[in-house]
Length: 109
Image (cartoon, rainbow, N blue to C red; front, top):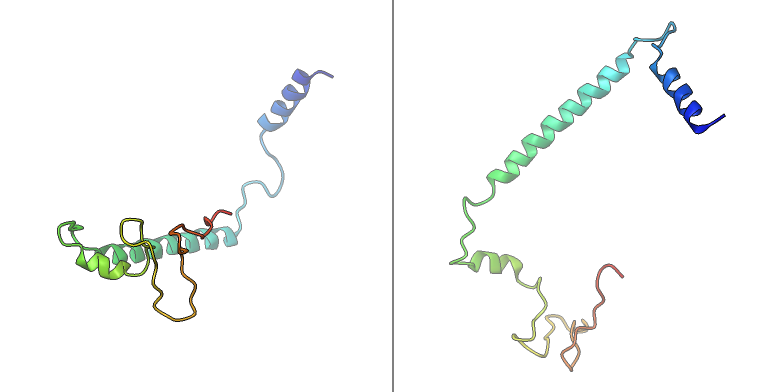
């Protein structure tokens, strides 16, 4: 039996109209699942609209003070800012060594 005969036989089986006592009957559980998915989608859209309304109309780059206050402490000092890092709490290891090189590993390793 060649490959083309197997493919032809498979296509013939798939092309036949389904028959049987259960064909075409849907379960009420399927309707419930679809309704739950629709309600969940509507909730997600509503929630996202609420979050988007909290955003400012424009992101003003002329006065970044609010952004800088929010980002305070999230960035490590760059080479232009300082070569020695200071720690806010005692006993916390610094992100940079005395030589000014970053000893942290990337997140993907």
